[in-house]
Image (cartoon, rainbow, N blue to C red; front, side, top):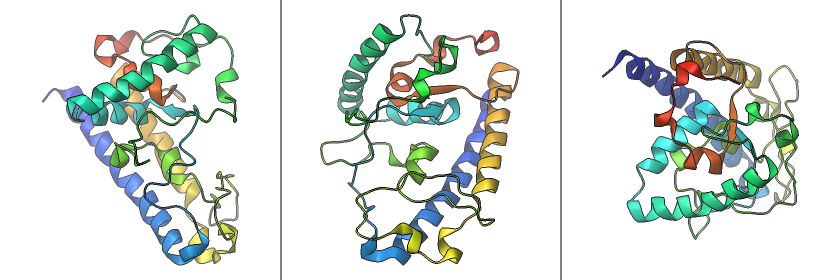
Length: 225
């Protein structure tokens, strides 16, 4: 194993452990909330439209998609390619590795909320095909993100909940969000430094763009944004 792959593996392992903590918190909330909360396996109501993910999350997603059975992987690619065509009409300069930060404006940060296009990584029953590799935003979506200090990180709360997630007791709902987000940022810095030779604050893409991108063709050390 090359030194780069070895160092990246260490970072990806740290990411997995961090995200496991997030999953444990979310599961604790669902258990405490019972029937008052709607989140469950196969519910994909929030898995719609385009939303940005980090290059680190995209890197993990690409490996997960590559490991899918060939027929399934080709179906996913078939759902992603029309999105690339659509986005290139809007941003002709969009090119591999399809990082949004290279675009001339910041409009990608405010994609239309009325876009109900299903995530290309969902199967016919609405289950995520790469659930274990899903980005952080997918893991937190649906519940408030209130730090133990009381700071509100404005998590997107699902409107399908029969009850109010905010009614969960503080010892369950309030969590170590500032710590988690700080650790994620640090991991991203380590990841981009190993990959490109410098730390980046942000490198973002959309899920369909990550799937169709060819990261192997890039000289990451010459990345210019």
